[in-house]
Length: 93
Image (cartoon, rainbow, N blue to C red; front, side, top):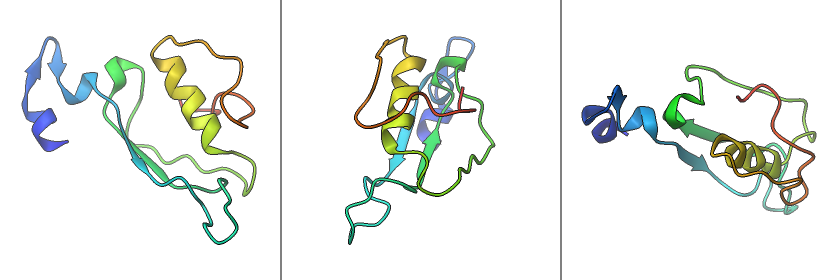
């Protein structure tokens, strides 16, 4: 991320135009749960993602599918559903 931030690209940096997703695929691997999974999004996704925020949701209400649905939308990839998600992640974009 630091290297991407140091490289100028157009009106910003490569990090401004990139999205890095860091996380895991299980919130509780003992129960194979994909709720309450921590993720970190780094970068600006070409101006589509505002940084410096923490989004929290009521436990067992959002799956990783909701996050991935939102990321697809940032890149204008339209899907009705992703996995068992219920739609885009509220407040992400």
